[in-house]
Length: 118
Figure 1 (cartoon, helix red, strand yellow):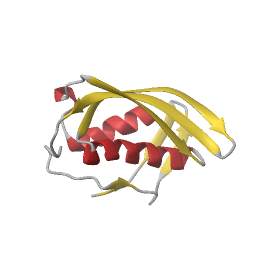
Figure 2 (figure 1 turned 120 degrees about the horizontal axis):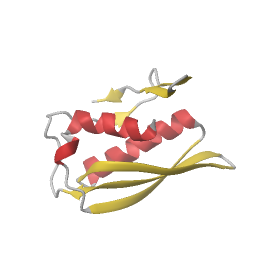
Figure 3 (figure 1 turned 135 degrees about the vertical axis):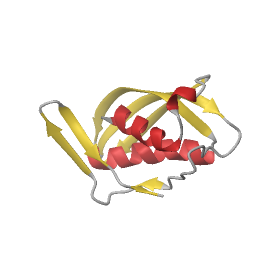
Figure 4 (figure 1 turned 90 degrees about the vertical axis):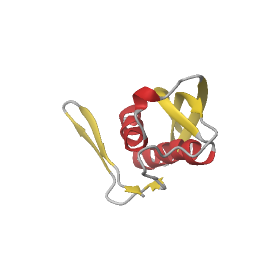
């Protein structure tokens, strides 16, 4: 679900198939629960896109775990530093929000619904 949420957000920003993957970043996200961890995850990716001019094309979640304050997720993101603002679809996502955020388990796995501030 975390990987798919990242790809879904990426598809709003650019064509994922056109992203060169010449750099790998290791990311660790923490949250009090799965919902906050998902929002933190997407906002961390947006930080790299908007502040570091890093466009990711590949995402692989490598693990989850618990902490005394909640949970964490480790992931590897592959992409490229563009050196410029990345908005080829003319859409700027400012952040993932908690507004109407849902994570549900169904027979096929997990589903998430996230609203972005644009």
